[in-house]
Figure 1 (cartoon, rainbow, N blue to C red):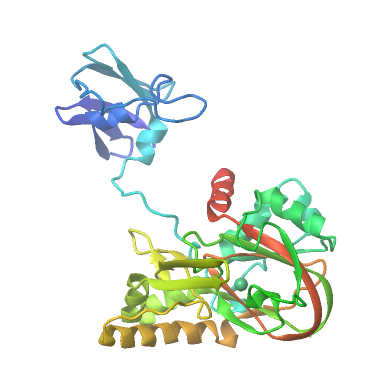
Figure 2 (cartoon, rainbow, N blue to C red; figure 1 turned 30 degrees about the horizontal axis):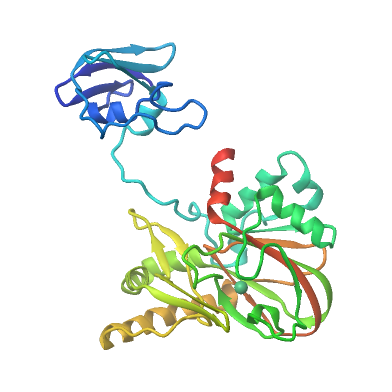
Length: 368
Ligand SMILES: [Fe+2]
C-alpha cells in the first residue's frame, strides 16, 4: 500500500492510502515516532527523541511527501523536523494494542494424522545453508522437530542447539548430560519413572521456550516419549467447553519446586491469552502444582475444567509417541507442546537443555 496524499489537520496528519482508506496520526505521535537520524539512533534503532521532558510545540510549517524516499517529513514551527517512513505508517495504519505473539497459525494437531508434513530433517540438512530456517519452520508449524542422523555426542548436540541461540541456564544447569542412575535425582526426569504430559517450568516466571533432548546411550526397555499439542486442546476446549476454557485462562495456577536449598514458585493460568484471546502459552504440570484454594464453588469448577484438559492431554489418540535414540534429536516448543514419558528399565544417558522463548521468536522474525 502506498500513500497517495496527506492533509494536515488540527489534530494530526491525515494520510490517504492508495486503496481509498485514510488514517489520522496525531502530531505528538509523529514526533515520538520520528525515524530521522537525530530522533532514532541509526545503528541501535533506539529512540533518542524525548517528547516528555519539555512539552513540544506541535504546530507545523509544512508536511512533505517524498515518493522516492518513501517517507514524510514534517517541519515544525520550532524549526525541528520529524521524518517517518511509509512502511512504519502503513504498519501502524490500524489502531491495535501491543499483543503477545499467539501460538501456531491454525496448524494445531489433534492427532499425528493431522500433521501434513512430518517435522523431521537430517543433521546434514540442518547444518546446511537454510537448515536452521527449516528447523524453525517445523517448530513454528507443529511445535516440534526431529533431527536425524546426528552424531551421538554431547558436543554435536550442544553445537546443534547453539546454532539457534545460546543455551539457557536454569536450576538444572545449562547444557547438561545425565542418566537415570543418579543417586539423588533432583527431578523425576532423571529417574526411570513414568511422567504424565506436562510443560516444564510451571514454577518459574518465564518458562523455558524450547527444550532439546538427545538420547546418547540406550540399553533399556520402555521409556517411550509422548508429545501432545496443548494448543489443539485449547482450541477444542474454546469451542466445546467455553466455560472451562474461560476458567483456565482466568485462574492462576501455582507451580512449585522444592529441594533442600531451593524453593521456586510461580503462577499463571493454564492458557495464557493475549488481548485478542489468542493463546500465547500453555502451562500444565500436575506433578508440580502447588497447593491453592479458591472459593468452594469455584474450586469445584476449576477441578472440572482441569480434569477435561488433563484427560484430553492423556488421551493416547492425541499423542505422538516415539522412542528417543542415539542420532535422533528432539526439540519442542515448551509453551505449546506437552511432553510425557513411559517408565523404563535399564540404562539411558541423555543430554540437552533449554532455549528462551524470546530467542526462538527473534529467529522467526528474522526469517519472515
Ligand atoms: Fe519435562
